Length: 100
Image (cartoon, rainbow, N blue to C red; front, top):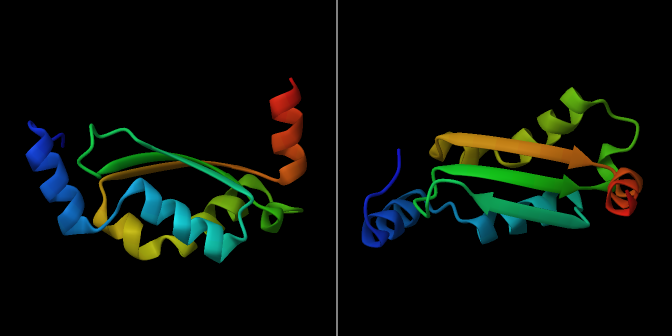
């Protein structure tokens, strides 16, 4: 679902209340995230997001447990949008990824 105009995109984002900055704020606060990158893949209508989340809370957790933490933190937001994809890293994993 992609908005045809910038006005439609802004209206849809306002109706859901979900923006890249609101997602970033929520993840930073609820998961003690050290780095959060949010990309709106819906052309600005706020219906499809991709994220990179780096948090020490992911230590000793497998991929499924990490995604469950993120999805739990964003339960209301995820219910209001069409698509959500996240990549979750510990600070150490993120540092290694940046160095490679």
